[in-house]
Length: 403
Image 1 (cartoon, rainbow, N blue to C red):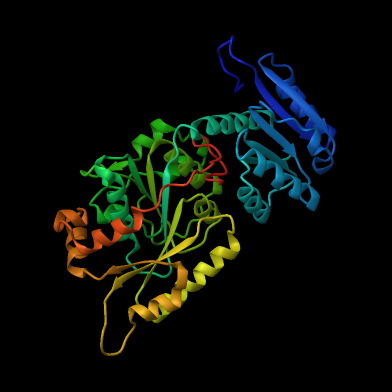
Image 2 (cartoon, helix red, strand yellow; image 1 turned 180 degrees about the horizontal axis):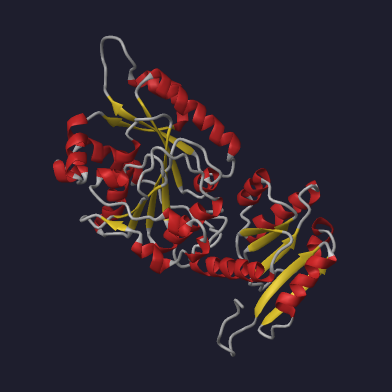
């Protein structure tokens, strides 16, 4: 059980609602017989009985909703906004649906379970949610996510430089982890001359096994002190990993580092929404070409429509060259095309970047005070991290990065 082991500690309180007798029996048989758990259940439809649900002092709230009822979804939205993750909310649903999962994620639901629910799965979900709520008050990682508008835009270089600056920012070193989620063509370890150690075959069958100890084994460390999580690239395999594998990995990372920088592939997977929504800042990287600007502008529009509750997409135009005369794009053209989504134009410095990659070192080690590092520093310095409510920043998250 997820109640505290100290017999003198306060009871764990579970506030629940059930719309069918079978789920109510599950709740009572799972929690009702444990003296360390105080269980209160409201019977009936959620929207009709929301006011009867008392979440005051609860460790976790369990709701049995009918997703076909707009009233239930509206009531859930109202409740999660009011609670803001304290206590965390777990939702039981009749069947899995990706669009519904996305809705629950945006509503800041800590976890969801598909009925019929096994008692052990219910207990574990409550434990993860309770641990996550406690850990999130202690450690709030600042999460910077990089998404390419097209291929070959230099995203990995900018993600690495951002991670290096976050690690060394403000004169004090901060624990920083770079996570490469491009499992097919990832290059973060190649750029830093490291061996990728994330074993997806080990964690994919049982994501719940992933804990701090196992994560430590799968982290690569650069001489600079930067930690990197990356799997060996598999260019011939187009693998779509389970939603839970990626979100649990990121939950665990976010709970143990001050800063997390995420390199996201261009291909959209089932977990991409969760990663983007949970980020403090989301950067779309493109290049100084007309197609590149079009791709970036379209991607900004799609993300704003799709993830209204997510961070504002910020566009980085990489390899910018100032042109005063002659044909080609100028600064004014880029500003006009991207509008308020334009965050930064990074100068083109091919020789510097090439040498850094060949040597596996940060840009500043090749040339201190270089123009690319100076540009990235301006990008990340002014904005303070926003609070993020995550599903379970401890070892066993499911709906990662729910805001």
